[in-house]
Length: 433
Image (cartoon, rainbow, N blue to C red; front, top):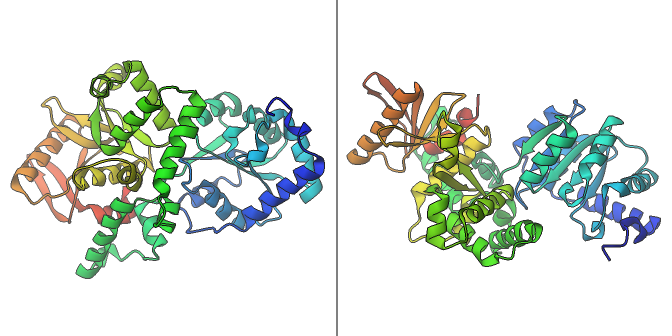
C-alpha cells in the first residue's frame, strides 16, 4: 500500500472529510493549564519565522497548540495532524493537493498549525516554500535530531525553536489548583504544604496524562512507545534487548556519572560506538539528557564521563529500579530540568583537587550544588569545600539548594548562598538572566 502515491489512495471528498474531522477534534480538545511556553510562542507571532515546538511524546505539544489556537481564533488557521494513520505515505509533493482541499473547505488562511511533522518526508521544503509566500507555521515534532538537522539546512535560521518539557514545579502546582504563596512572607504551614507538593512532584513527575489519569500506567506505555516506535523502528535496530537494558539502567540511575567504556563492560553491550549511538537515540527521543564536564578543552569534554538525567522523575520511577527512594538524585534531576528549561549552556564541574559540583552556568558565572540534607556537619563541610574550590577556580558565585533557607556562608573571602530548593523552584530566580 505504501508504494501507491498518497493522493491516489483518497478521493478529494475523503481528504476534505479527513481534514474536517481533524479540525473539529482539535477544536474540542481540553486546553488544560496554561503552559509557560505559551508566552514565548506569542512573542514570535509577529515575526515571519516558523515556530518549532519539540519535545517528548505526550508531553503536551498538541495541547500547547490548542492554547495558541484559542488566542488566534478558529477562523485564522488550518490544522494538520500527521500522526493520523491516514497520512501514512504523505510526502511534501502531495502538499499542493492538500492545500487546495484546505482552501475549498475553510477558505483562504495564512496560518498553519501542524502536529508531528517529522512523519512527512521532505517536510522542510514544503514549509520553506509556503513561508516564502507569506504563510506562518506553528509546528510540533518529537525527534530533536531530525528537527535540528533539517531546520539548519532548509529553513536557514528562519525559525524559533521552543522546547516543551513535562510540567515545571510551578505548572504542577497550577495543575492541582494550588496558587503560589508569597515567598517573602511564607508561613510555616505554607512552607510545609509546598514541601509536600515537592515530594509529590518528585514521585509523580510532570507528564500531563499520567497526572490526569493516575490509575493508568501511562508512563510505562509512553516509555515503550518511545523505545519501539521512535528508536527501534526508526533506526531499524535488531538489538532490541541491548537498547532496553541500557535504557533501563540509565532511567534507574538518574544524576549518575557514566562512561561509555564502563557501560559497555557493565552491561556487555557490543562496542563503545554502540553505547554512544544508543545514548544519542535516547537523547534525540527526549527520554534522557547528558551533561558534560566544564573544560576549556573540547576534547576533554567529549571523553570525560557524562552525567545522565531523565526527562521526568515520575517516568524514571515508573520504569526504572531503585532499592531506596533515591530522593537526593531525584532532587538533582529536578534542578537540572529547571535549569535546562532556560539554557543549554550547562555543565558539571570537577576541580583539580577532585571535588565535583553539580551545575555550572557560564553565562551567569553561577555554580550550584544540590544537597538533600545540609544539617549534618560532615555533609556541610564536604559540600562547602567542593563549592569553594570550584568558585576559586572559575571566579564564580556559589549557591547551595537544600531543605531550607540558611544564613549565607563566608568562607575564605567567598560568599555562598544557602536557599530552600522548593522555594527556588517555585520562584522566578531559577530562570536564566
